[in-house]
Length: 149
Image (cartoon, rainbow, N blue to C red; front, side, top):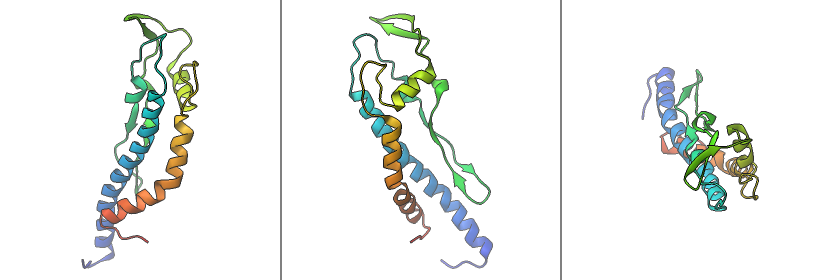
């Protein structure tokens, strides 16, 4: 590919960078999702019924322009959680003491509703991302046509 100006190079890189960033976001999301699913598989509550709200609260953002680059965000959206009630034997009853924030904090640290310990979603995800994110980003950039070494 031959470019006629620095502006053409910049436009090419910026366009393809969007593709690369979205691909890298999907791979990072998969890593976090893996630990979230592992967390869910470790414990079967007998006191309450699972709603799987935490599982569906993990979200990917749209691409955000930073001026001369792009970013994305992966986060747990507390607005998708409602733990004011819980299901016990098919009946909705008030859930005293377990707010959305307390539930997120417990899960991120590996607690299953205070009953037992399991995979600390946050620290496991961060460790995996710290070990792999540069490689993932580089592979995504190369895959999108932006050669990096």
